[in-house]
Length: 382
Image (spheres, rainbow, N blue to C red):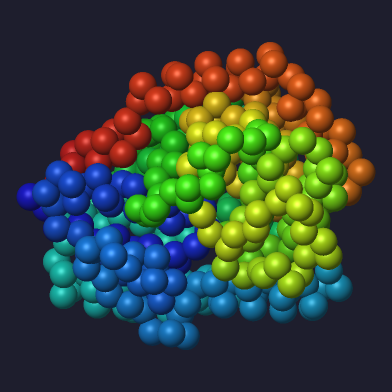
């Protein structure tokens, strides 16, 4: 059995779930797992019985990235494209700082293989590991000659960061794309060492399913905003306003960075949770209204749930475009909020063909085992 060092960097956002899905599968196969990450990683792994090493508090990714974005937006007067290079520069400085603890962990742990996410690529590259290392990319294919231009798939502020990370993927020994190849526009030109493994982002830590989900009543609608801070509360406000008087039951998840105090009104047909198993809701839901995060969209597709997507930034334009191309979602541009979201939700709720399309993809996906595919490929390096 091998020794695996997992560089997780942060316990929130879409990178974490695919990485931990692969790590959990390796642990279940008998390999020794050590997870290196910030304090949010330690909190997210509480109760999972995985050995963790915690980075110094000043290296927490969430505050670092949030501060970089705020400073860049202030310096550029809110110009997203101009802010991108500033964010990239700040995150490079963070990666150089994180490389030191990674190098020390490598020397002390002597891993047989190192596994990280896209956000960890630059830090691991700077640490120059002497062992093989793997990148688990949490979204659609990132790399040379993608099926769509990078500036069409990513928000303008994210483009320099993504291009920088993509340029470093060649340093790794294996790149696993945690998505469905059919969802990813049936892209067939993966470079050597790149592999599709399927939607690892459906992984969730064990949790108890709320009993109210099983109570009879109107169909459930899951409304979800990003679990990593971005200014997408208008999606939640628009959905609550549009569907608050419809014959549905809404469940809104706010994530760790927002509270109900930020909502103008919570309709009677709505429950608000900071955090809940999205899978438990999507198994029963008729609709997902979301910011088009890759993890949320893959979970909805896994359970055959149609979507209304409002891409906000990061990789969300590309995720939404792929879901729409697959025929399982309507896309609402953010500048058309709040008016367009109610009409889109009504169309999707009434669209039996879209529901059938989503269910067909769910049946196909549920015959796969993404964690085992990822673990098997990583084991090839041991």
